[in-house]
Image 1: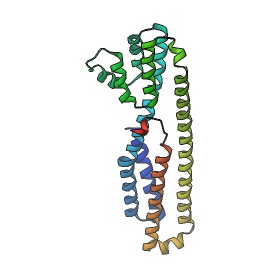
Image 2: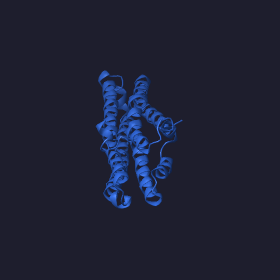
Image 3: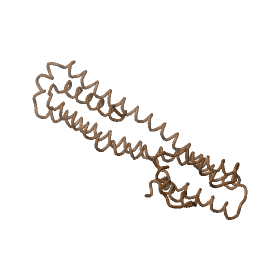
Image 4: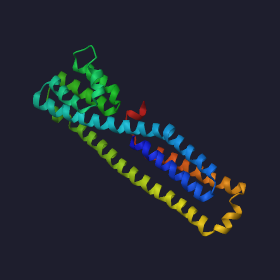
Length: 234
């Protein structure tokens, strides 16, 4: 069981349980549980998978470029640099590259450009082509490219940490909201008995759950919206 599926089930069950405690209505609780679970499995999963793919691809790109340039500076061979750098990317995609009917390194790099999609990888290919045509010190030529790559990596690292912190704060806020709801349900038990079967009360509980779900959706979109030039243009 993936961690995402486990977290989705836990959150959905917790919402269902809290909704039942707050409303004393198991039908409303089951409806809330099912709606949350469907949202996480159908919508949230797509958003997180796209985000995770982008982050993983960037770090593969990051390691590929660094490894290729360092290897090329040492061995002065495109094929040797490629063979070393290709070890840093997903093995399944490596198998796809092996099916390309070409022995030209540039053809393999152009194919990788479709895999990485990032603008900085296109600049890397241009740099390699210039170096191949004109020669020169690849480390010196790639100085600005590597600096830009480093800045992108710092941006993603800091953005990921900020997103995790914001999501934690968001989760704590809603946990406290539901805790207060449950506390008031038991603290004002006599009042609760009088209104628990009223339609407006049931609708109010459902609206709170819906508002919570919408806020979760917008929070997920916001905190997974790291922009990397090239990837978000396609």
